[in-house]
Image (cartoon, rainbow, N blue to C red; front, top):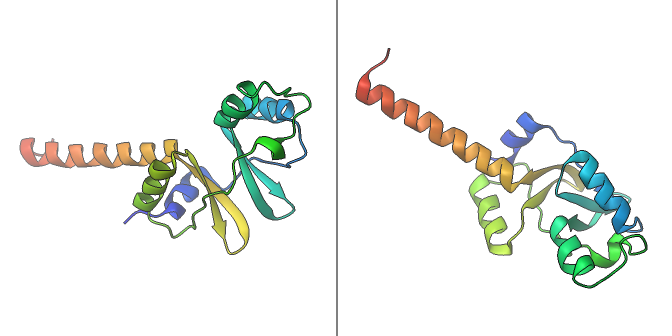
Length: 144
């Protein structure tokens, strides 16, 4: 069974983080510059929240808050669902579906070790389906 560690080995362990005192405007600029949909909010070594595109829409825009003065810590999502490197990918998919989230920070011991996204899981699943299709094609039509 596939585990989170396999995804981290391919994509790397870099995680975009931000502090809770940073403004929403600065956080959005960082997300745009990196072309990502979420930042892990940390204080020191501790994960204190997630800040996502959805937070911007549901809490800042709809709440008519000023992104230049509103702090990430005020509008971030808490508590944060996390996983470990040895977590099965099926479990990650289940958690993401049930909690309606797209990002799972990966914790090893007490350290942030990476992040797994719904896109990572989907790409892995597509690759597995392609492999299965190729094997079935070869079984039916023979090797060429």
